[in-house]
Image 1 (cartoon, rainbow, N blue to C red):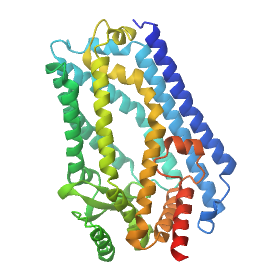
Image 2: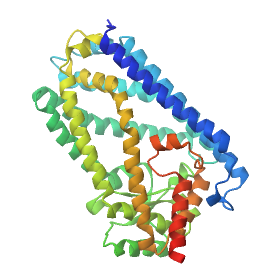
Image 3: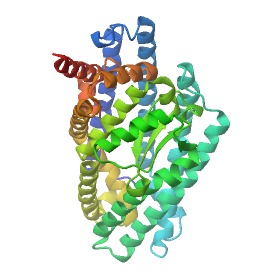
Image 4: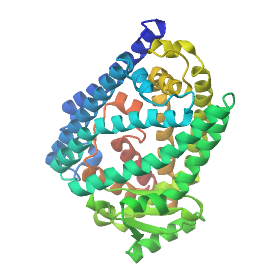
Length: 422
């Protein structure tokens, strides 16, 4: 039976504030776009017309509304599961957890994960086959979508199952120090995935092959050589069979480090623009941004696991949500759900840190390529091709954006180019 005590009212209050903040920010974003969405920013004059700007507004509003609806659905499901006593009911259906701790824990989380995935399928279908196709992005077939869904399910079941089994074993056999050893396992798991992704996981979903344009490859290798960086190779990926969105990324480390370009990017951008985009990525390597983010994540996960080790021993946490006693692996979920919304407070700080890294990476482009015009051109083309929002609300951008707003970013690149020419 659910207990309406101080902890329950605290949870509901934090949950409600989180919901209202997210909803208010989304509403501000849409309202701001309606007010300013027909204004072509100065840096995009001659690059984007009124018709394209109208498409951007429609696409941004549709994706924002769907995101808000999906978030609301997730919140309602969370409340229904917690307040409806479904977690104690589920635990009662499983093998006695005192005797089969790891098995019961795997089944408990596995069933919840499956239910959550099934609940999200209608939104993914609508996003993929209605919104994306309506705006000219979607190229994926239903058969390929189902294949991706199945592969993703099997892959996540195996990988996350292994990680969860390790956590549960540590929780059972080392109840006092499990959090520290779990942190070591988590860090090692992250490193292993980073190493394996380019050579084992990515090829399961896409055909990844050496880039065919030898001239572009030579330009990229020469750019890397300027900084003494070596890569396992420069590759292209058949992203176009799923979507017309464009992108490129660095992935892996050590012998698996490689550059991957979407075939859609190669088809729509000049060699100079692609090289400039990759120069920006090299700026991240120069600033050790990836390493700093990994260290920050490692420190944060250590603190969270330490806090979790105290929460799972708190009897009130279990009584509040209808459990008769302490069930350690259930406590991990309850602690995350009750106190998780508080981490919305640190979202603006994390966003600001990531934007700082992006500004620093932009600053590396001119020394590497001789100017910023090519990167500015690439960003303008990316904005047009991907229907990126050119009018984010300042508060929304401050709170959520991991990259500086495009208009501000391109304007600063233009100022750098002007300084070079003067």
